[in-house]
Length: 518
Figure (cartoon, rainbow, N blue to C red):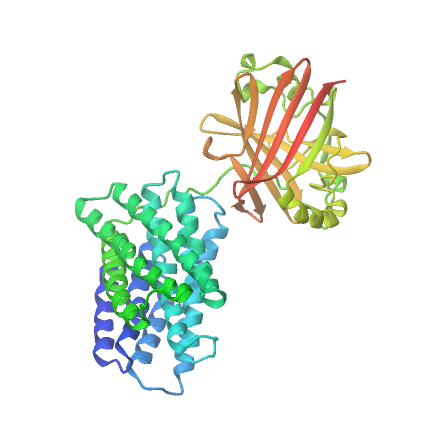
């Protein structure tokens, strides 16, 4: 069915439901989302995915029957039909995420909105079945509506916005919007003060997106006025949410739930949701994400990685260096000769490392050490004293170009087995490094560049198209929320290198190297 057909048929259905509803008027605020808003937004997101619509039809029929009939024996079945629909939507969102990973945060916002809808379905079922959630029935119902509007529609809308305009503030504002539903829920459950703080956090995100919405270039001025109005409605309703949370936390104001129902019902349903959907239906920006396509090593491990993994893939050839010629990456003349020579004649050098786990990550590092010694991969020491790494570089056949395995050890313990290769995209050559893991592999695509006589190797995708850290599993390439960076420099015939690792942009591991010519 076309988008116009869905809009007309579902609008007619909702008007019939509204006319014959036996429930209090405010229940229509959730019903209009379930019958009209959610199907329309899913159509904008999934476009030609017609399979999802086979789940939409029974879901909206079930909701409609619930709204126009008195309590009956089939209420449980009808509610579960809608819950199944929200679960399918969540699985579609999860599949979108798995096929892409932590890249294109605007698409991640849409994925999270789809997954949050299932939580809304759970609260809806709890409301229909009158399950004791620890809250009053009205608060149980309000939580369900919260996860349909603020947790489904809003993340999708900010995802559409990010497809068009994504400044440096966008990821941070998106993170606020995505975590706020959970923080609000925790605050309502455990602490009125936390609820108050979470609403303040929400305000930062909402007003930030109002500003971004004003700056975006749209299809036309009519679309801009609709979308800015939609986001602006949230800027009004969040103020009264703040007054309500303030009253709960400090007993200062007396904003009642009845007032919130009437006020939010008008602004959130008619202005934020309806106006927003009309605005984005004029022109829905296409996704910027392009499927990742670069060579992936066919070598994976099992319960143990270590040197055993080389037995089936080792070929009778050795290498002295990690690369044959550094000029394929950078202008060698702009670098000190020793840096290029280290990569081309790696086995002529001694490597001394000092591992520093950042304090907040040490408990996780200690836990991982229980497995890494057996795994013999990423088996970094917990101590911060300097230790020499030794090893070999051997030829490997893994389906990529001139792959070589760099085996690094500390004394007799295997620390790393990294499989080095290269690939070229858009006339830029990358280091393509694979670390075999049990039944999968971690892939580091590093871009190389000269910086003031130093060599920078980085996985930051902002600097190059393919750069990043990925998990490869059965043909799926999942971008991880990790970043790594090497900075090499020469001073007095000694090479030093600083290797930094971050997760969600937070540093968790730093390794300092001294590299000496044998």
